[in-house]
Image (cartoon, rainbow, N blue to C red; front, side, top):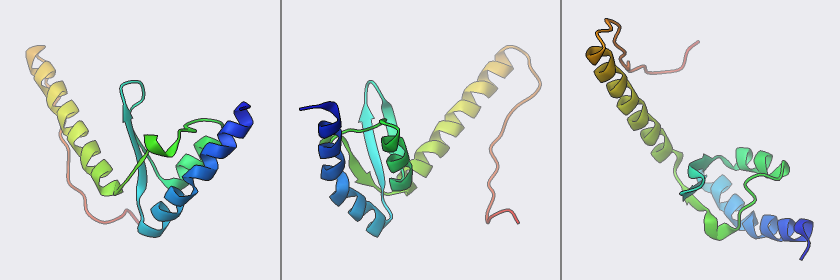
Length: 107
């Protein structure tokens, strides 16, 4: 099977997932040792696939709520801030970082 035929077959097999993701407001999730944790909105994944990137068969994707991704990002940010502050303290740097809660969108 040629690369373009294989790519088209994969893209066609992803159509039901795209339809479900768009109908339910879900994102594509993939996790592997090589790629790490990957979260893509349907629009972003289509863009990447149009550039011949992330053309992975349906069995490599899981549909998840992007709320989980937001929580994951917050935890990562908290860990990074904590690590920075620990090192800053050890090296005698006076500047410390903190995360602040904000609500609503900026006008």
